Amino acid sequence: MAEDEIRGTAEGTAPVPLSVLDLVTVGAGRTAGDALRTSVAIARLAESRGFHRYWVAEHHSMPGVASSSPAVILAHLAAHTTRIRLGSGGVMLPNHAPLVIAEQFGTLEAMAPGRVDLGLGRAPGTDGATAAALRRTDRLHEGADDFPEQLMELTRFLDDDFPDGHPYRRIHAVPGPVQATSPGGVQSPHRPPIWLLGSSGFSARLAGSLGLPFAFAHHFSAQNTIPALDLYRESFRPSAVLDEPYALIGVSALATDDEREARRQVRAAALNMIRLRTGRPGLVPTPEEAEAYEFSPMEEEFANSWNANVIHGTADEVRAGLDDLHKRTGADELMLTGNAHSGDVRLRSYELVADAYGLPTA
Image 1 (spheres, rainbow, N blue to C red):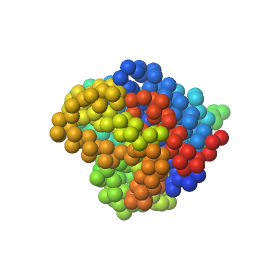
Image 2: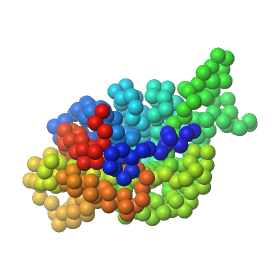
Image 3: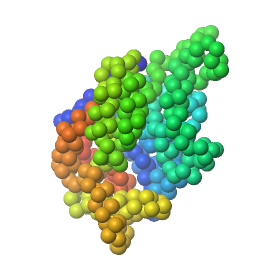
């Protein structure tokens, strides 16, 4: 596997490669179809402006997040793009049989050769009851504890290299390498690179010890970012995948033409998060709804704390915030997620960031 399938190139005046994390958010008064059309528009914009990769994240039982099936969405995006890397940020591995994920991403690789990433997380991506329904078991801790074993099994399915005597030796993920060993078989030289995702130290240490690229969820675990990146770099051992560490961080960032509008948008997104955290998930509210909502003192404190980690404002303000974050963390790549009620606002945000850094316009 070539390192150039992992490492990106900074474009324009950006300090590192810029990428996109899409939660396929659904605003009040909008449909999931509207959200998916926005995803296509953003992916096309990101490709034309030199963003390096476009990831979607697995979530479940959240009305305002329509990304329950990353592989399905990625197949749709592959049909509407030609160059940008596409991937999961991530697939929650304990929710699925490793063979199923190997088959899904082998299929995606066949659709978009050489531009598919497989990002893996060990959290459920939802609440405990929904996770139990997904996994057909309530033994959720076992799933997380078994993550390294599941990861190894998935890797062996992707590489088709179970050892002799293993019970899965004669089982093959198709599409996959086994096709090259069949009479007349020809197989793509590419295999989706595995990334480990995390919001604490567990995956950071595991990614480092295995020599894999690492993606950290700064957008909802900012206090752990630098410790996790330090742990990843300290734990890193060179591998067939990477000679040196490579870490990206997910960043909440929203640029608007007017600073006040940015504040309105992120306050509505914070209200959405308050409702999610208090067991009332719903569609992303409009800024007008958030302005009319009476925040309790505790909710106001949460909203302010949450938005302190959202880089928002004019394009110049967002660029300055991203530059500062890069200097503080040393991240090798910044993956931006712009959460807002309106798809047009999200699309405009990525356009403004691209302009602020002088990214290509072809």
